[in-house]
Amino acid sequence: MRAWKVKLRRLEGDFASPGAEGGIKTTLQGGPIAPYAPAPADPVSNYAANAGLGLTANRGLRELHTYHTPLDLVRERSPEHPVALVRRDAVAAAARWFQTKFKGDVLYAVKANPSPWVIETLVQNGVTRFDVASIPEIALVAEHAPGSQMAFMHPVKSRRAISQAYFDYGVRTFALDTHEELAKIIDATGGARDLNLIVRMAVDAEGANFSLSGKFGVNSFDAPGLLLAARQATAELMGVSFHVGSQCMRPTAYQAAMAQVGRSLVRAGVFADVVDVGGGFPSIYPGMIPPDMDDYFAAIERGFNEMPVSETTELWCEPGRALVAESTSLLTRVELRKGEALYLNDGSYGSLFDAAHVKWPFPVKLYRGEGKNAQEVEGDLKPFRFYGPTCDSLDHMPGPFYLPADIQEGDFIEIGMLGAYGVAMTTRFNGFGETEMVEVSDAPMASMFGLARRSIPAPRPASNVVRLSRPKGRKRRRK
Image: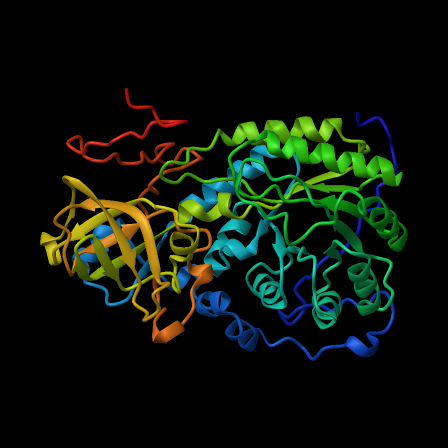
């Protein structure tokens, strides 16, 4: 029950704000920079050092060509390179939904899609707080959302990155999951006391497609000592965070995780000023129909009410996939067909990382023809697998992707629901990876927020295919 009351320590001027000359105002609280004072950040070189950010850093929405539908693009020209088809309205709708429904603060996880147009659209629709994991992400947000609030939520950071975030960008919120990282943060900020320290907790990840509990998070045995140390290290906010895993399909996983975290707080004998439930909010893919988003928020509210927190404790979340998955699809071209294998001009080293390594069968559409004769093609569907343009045999997307049986070289395939971890994962391996970006105004292939249907049916094999069932258990004895 939330019956306890503690003094709420709020941090004013928490994060970067635009300076008089349009730059970043530097905050020098907490002592001298000492040995970790970095040179001023160079956003251009920082972007270039990161594949995803480097490819999207200068692609703001105002620079994009606009088409009503992907078919209009195909009719106007036959693009040589893959094309990311972005839908600003999808990001805006998701942002408004979270702002209206979630009873706390929403921090966008920039890693999901660092495109400037995404950041600008989120700010325009009320999301002005960002979960960042690196100095390039911090510089990106500072440029495209000046005055916004940033939280450095990577549990392991270099001393230089901590110092640069604190002194050059005014970041005051830092995540950690060890005593060593806590000491590093204090040292790199010159012994600052105006820090918001968020302890990342390890929790069970039942119901998620990708468990994120193996790499980060303090276990329940070590958590009380770290929570107490973090509480004593700051005069500002001390909080807890966790991640139930990406693409979580079970709303009650959040409530169960909050119960785990609550028990650690009781053992530590401390109150948390912040409870950050992290990300993991799902999107819709073929064969994956998540519960309503309202169910997730209701489970979080129940879990929060049951935690040993005060009436002034803040509730945060860090959605990434849920805010942007619906926003982008990818237009690729078939370069060659070998039976059931289609060789495309994009692949796992481009925007199809998840299709290759997680083996998700994203939804697809087929377009054929040139000029005004181009059209969307439907018909009898057949399962295909994809290969990307590189010489690496790992550049393989097994699918199955169900497309018309007569697909051929020169056809264009639109692959949907790639707004999360699509363009963000693009590299230039083997000389490929150049991706054009245009804006379209049609609906996504599916939507959690009322923009399209709530499911993507998984196609079934043709009715004339006979499946032989195997006997279960012990083999039957012959008579």
